[in-house]
Length: 212
Image (cartoon, rainbow, N blue to C red; front, side, top):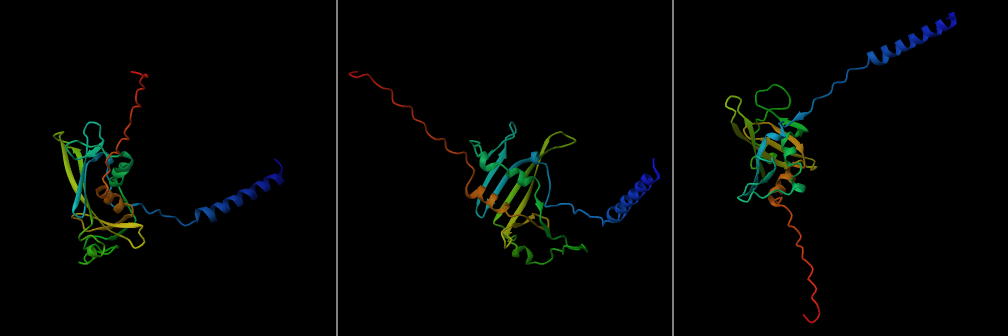
């Protein structure tokens, strides 16, 4: 190896090392904020959904055999899958855009939910949409199925219509979730997802012979 080539190689290594040190090693560390969740659960645990819109209410349950949802009626009317698709996914784990307030006494942001008017301001004192979600789990000791229900309050939409104010019953925190929440669950009551009425078919008349 020639002396000239060795000098060029050393200079190149110095330049590469300098670049790595000044532009890579000294680059400010970027911290990624973890996503904020309203709550998070496995979708397969959902066995019942009750939705109330003002003075109207509708109920859906999951069939224990095929795990499909149907109306909670005597006929076990199936739901319209084109309308139903995504409902249980929405309820399994909505990411939140923002936490507006938290428990009283926490010395950190966001501020505590100790303003008596805060729930009314966001439409959560008398929410127009209330969703009861029933979960099915197996007891670790007995092996029997147990059911627990939690309640969600869906309040007003933000002024830009992009988000909904939401709260879980018995918990003070107020979150922002995607603005589709309110309309999707309100429509389940206002326009229930009944299966489409099949188009009637008529058999063509049978031709008869002349003179018969």
